[in-house]
Length: 203
Image (cartoon, rainbow, N blue to C red; front, side):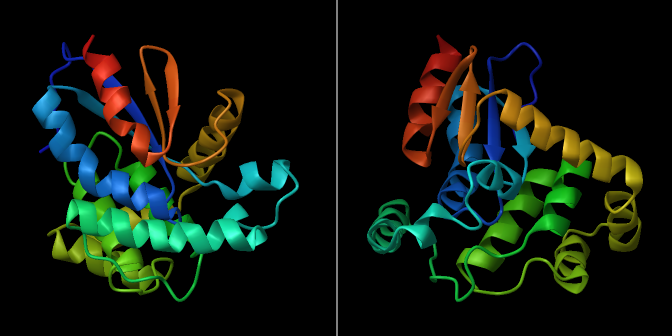
């Protein structure tokens, strides 16, 4: 269970399932926030529209070869540092619209954080598709949930609109990458700033 104390300090956690550095944060933030007694407000979103607004048609790690090469080695080091499983995905970035919609639908529900962790592990540890309905339904089944009902609700027009509004909100707040954290009105970008964001939330 994530910290749910409404009186506790809060951190907003904006992440994208196709983002490799979001993988690190999704896997780490639960334990760190519990230790710090900070509430997590999970904010799944999609980076694609934001990248397109910058004139990019894919990840900057693909557009800049040297940056991409450094990133893959950095991911190996970081996963070793945090004892996280790692397999460089054969498809990057993977399409993730359906799991994002499900995560958005699940905000505030107790199963949502574990669903996010399992999606990330499927992408960055097992190197498997995360967009197919069968893939996400399988994760929901593993969690003992009604996969058919959740997928249907996540694919409904109201939830699709909510995701478009989430993207608009990300752009309005100046988010340009993932993961991004907000604590006490301050924005922090990157998994390596997670500890700083949690520290500010507590102060």
